[in-house]
Length: 53
Image 1 (cartoon, rainbow, N blue to C red):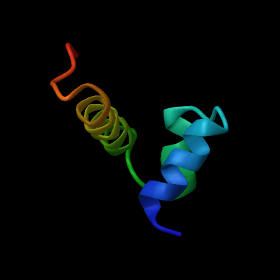
Image 2 (image 1 turned 45 degrees about the horizontal axis):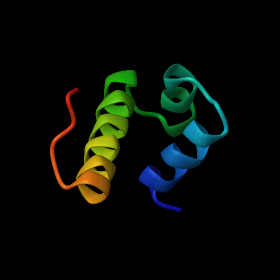
Image 3 (image 1 turned 90 degrees about the horizontal axis):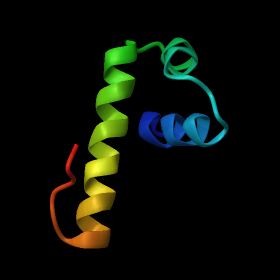
Image 4 (image 1 turned 90 degrees about the vertical axis):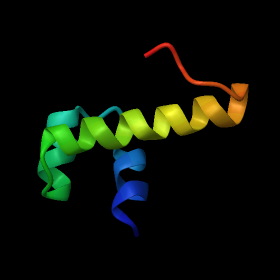
């Protein structure tokens, strides 16, 4: 399973960014960055524009 899919699955399970980082062996900043990019991508797909974040 790709790291992004694992990250999303763990996030959906309610794991904290710290837990996700430890499980996947990446930094918390990387987890935050991936989640932010996924959120921006979904925002663009749903609403066709940039988020306010």
